[in-house]
Length: 565
Ligand SMILES: [Zn+2]
Image (cartoon, rainbow, N blue to C red):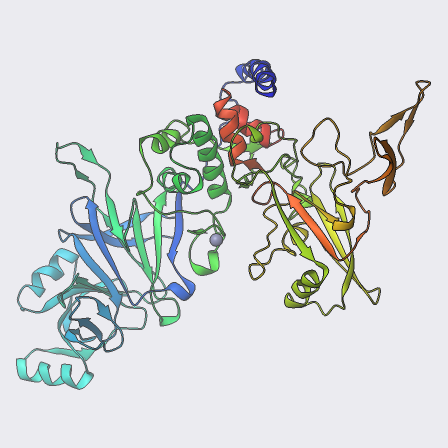
């Protein structure tokens, strides 16, 4: 029944949209000034002493640097397909053929960081390679914008000095700055080149496009730490420490590395396209999100999960290609297209969850999502008053025993605030996303998965009021009317309790209304959905796509008043 009704509505809805969108084809195309994104892969506490890179598809690597306007300047190319970028320190090659900056149990060899710097400079990488060819163990070095040639690798200054005398080479014993990156052939101590431009420029390495076994041209992909990526890699030793690794990638290739991890690859095409639009717009809107760390977006859910090309398949790539260059816009500006897994029945206004009111982030009642299995359609946890007291204290609130909870709800029926009162009459109020998370406790294995839940004293359970077999009890009397025997209609005041006549006589019904204080020895927290409830519901998009809606319909349902261009 419900399904048919929705189908009918779906049909009408899409007709209306065809008329609207048909009037202005491509009216407001957005010209993105930042189609190249910088994505942090290893940073903060995850910086690396050495970083391997292996060509997956391609013919060797080009190396150089990126200018501040994100253009790659190539300095030279190598045909090697397995290279390692490492700190220019004495680096140990273990007998496991991995590199260590501290001596491992079993050493095979050492990449020494002291060299003999030849007096002359070279005009180009090729010229430096040519000079280096005169020595068995020399390599080109790009130091502060000038090509030089270094000979040998020694573990001490004295060692380099002694070798210089012994070998009769005219030069200077030296070690480069704490910004220097040494590049070797992976698994060996053979240095290919060094790059040290202090804090001015960072070494960038980009795989060269290649061909597959049939000779068809293929965009280069590189393996790094077990994942493959399009684009280039940049290596920076911030403050002279370990290496921060940034993937510098075209926004379309970035989106190809996001949607398989944000939505299952088997999802309907229109849902994948809606996700591609969200991921692209979100990425473009957050250029410089982590500017102080040297990149735009990180690769975790802090920004958006991004794991390179491995999870992509023909369907997910197609969803990106078919929406290439399209963004979600409001008044011609990029929208902050936040999204979540499932809304449990209604999304929420942005200002009721995390920040200022965005005109396009309006909560909507979602009748689509319940048609698919979200895995979080309904969940419920019972907390004793003692457990609630314990959680609050654990989270740093110096409260007495909690004796009551007063929840308030938004007009869409999501949680807005929770006020906890202790036996001394003191109270603590948490609102918006804090209301959503304050009762979340991994230790107790009791969770609030979304912003959509109710908190009811167990003393009130079982006598809540349900209207027309709704899955959630009535939270608010507004809109409820009593019809008298003479047909008179009277609005029910928004009190905490109502009396109803049942087969067993008069019973009190609790209205779990906004601002109605719940008190007792335990509380039932029950809800639906998973995520922050703002913007697009991914499962809702899935359901809409299954009903025949297009990606445009999906985007315009979850983001109010937007255009696509
Ligand atoms: Zn981030």
